[in-house]
Length: 345
Image (cartoon, rainbow, N blue to C red; front, side, top):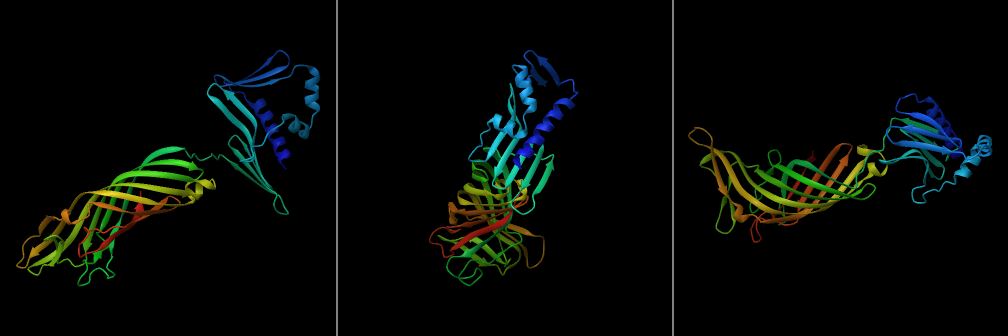
């Protein structure tokens, strides 16, 4: 089947050469029966025939003979061979390329792809026009934004919100925001190693709005305010974070671009930039809302480290993080490990 595809390719190139009437393309006939096809500023395709006997022999050759005379070598790794290549000062450009993989054959002619599958009883032929090979640069940099929600898991074996554990966290309002600068190095097709540096903001909004986090004697304390009406209570912290991710992009592996499935995982580590508590309340006798801020950073861990995972489908990407160390400093009565999940923009 491949020889017939090559025959069509050669016929198409002949038609292409005869069909150009652009002023940028000129066909010159030089001495010794040479044919020079000029295009652009410096590109040339040259067919040289030393004598009339060779020219007559070329006209009498069939497709099989032409293929044998070309003495094409197949790349053993990719199964590809280049039939026609145009060279110019700016480099070389492939016009016709063929890839064979058992009963499957793929032919590229400019922007046209021809797929032939002879694995079944009937031969299947598929033609795609206007398709371009999606680029997968060896190295690139980019920015992304994490937007998700936070919670924590009680390391003491008790659910958050118990009498001796940290207050339960409310999902809506416990935002996780991250700004990341990423550098991606391609290891192989569809397999990348990404390094990132960014800033993350943690917010833990409590279910019980009457709890207030304060700086205690050697440990953070959560007191229940009965003297006021609480409206909002939370603890927030920010971290400078570095991460390393190994990513598999099955879309790129299968030449599907962003339509494929992606997974990534790797470690991260961060250094705390700040931390405080916020309590919004109103006096029992009425009046406007008031806010109390208190620095509780001294009771938060200065370092955080954990595992990050990413999942992508199409153009949508999700992330999740889990801190392997606790939110509060070692020795605190509240042993909770932060966890977050959300979407990547």
